[in-house]
Length: 136
Length: 389
Image 1 (cartoon, rainbow over the protein chains, first blue to last red):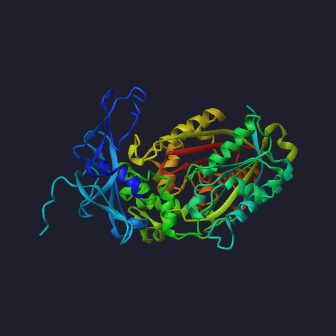
Image 2: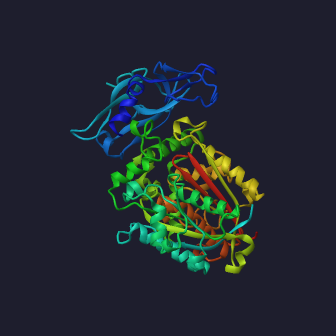
Image 3: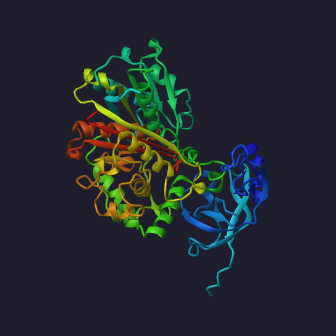
């Protein structure tokens, strides 16, 4: 993605800032300029999510497009935030531990990089809320 | 609104066609469709072309003009329109053609689709296809196309007990059908074990759960139903054309294992054709991944939600089963040149309804359905065709 497109979303990606419609109370992440429920009568304000949620579904990506190829295999997941909306992100944990229903919290991480001289993307990923007991 | 009929069909072979260019493919499909219809170029009122990403795959936009020109129709100045809805571009081009004839605006229309995907490397292809999802909020987070469908599959397995073997049975069946289709990219059998032992792309989807990267083109000739018999003894009538949208991102869906766009478009199509799912004799559905076919047969109402895997494994969707699915080999074995796929589905239904499908012929085929999806479910296009008007 081009630098301006990424830059425009920095605060959302870094800080998990979405929107809330003050008319109906619904939260949105990614942010929206119009509430799908209230449409033209929506009252949109920015909202910083608490960063707590649950894994709705996941996959382990073994083959990725070029900006992410270095990071495979990685866990891609859809996470439902406690406030309601769902988003796509990555979960950092032992691949054997990931499961549907896992409680997770947000964390600031590198997302990907274009090349040695290219842009490095940062953003929000997730980690398990409870550290699993050590196996040794 | 006028009734519409298909009076001619054409399709190139699908596959890695390194010696053929985009324009050559489209012209080949178009010419075979108009020869099948027995019409002259001067009769054509308009062209609609489904194409997902000429810009990324062959660095060419303005596809409408290119097609009209290389089809030899530039001197006739026939209007030509490119239609795009990711992997549903072909189905949508067909729908635009049908609407143009039904409205009375045009009489003879060519609806086609084409994609040339093998002129760039596989990474570029993967990235171009990822543009069918939300680049800013899925792609940037590392979502790949197989990754999105893998997340549908994972939840389907968790919720309904669907197994990897059941997913694999879809690929095995579609390869079996593809073996009987001389235009198919893969014309050989595969086994459940071969699917399960193939490389993992996005867990639980193996590479043999995925449709391939393909080149190909397909076209149909549309005419008002009342004059269709002037051109052919075996017109195929369009009984319904329906389209619905869903959220662009998978994470925004009401239910991750249901494509609401398919459910809504199907309901509209069944109402328009005045049929129920049990009246459909066979269907071409959008099996970009094995899980997609399982969700499709559920969302189209052929089986109950959650029963798709079991039904596939038990042979319900095989030729000779209760509802044969993807007799062409589907996207999995026939190939998936994205812009061409939706039109190819209509070509297959037409050949079946005319009784011209050879070894893969469905006995007593009277009513067939096509189901074409864009992205992970942001667009669904459904058509119902019949031998009788």
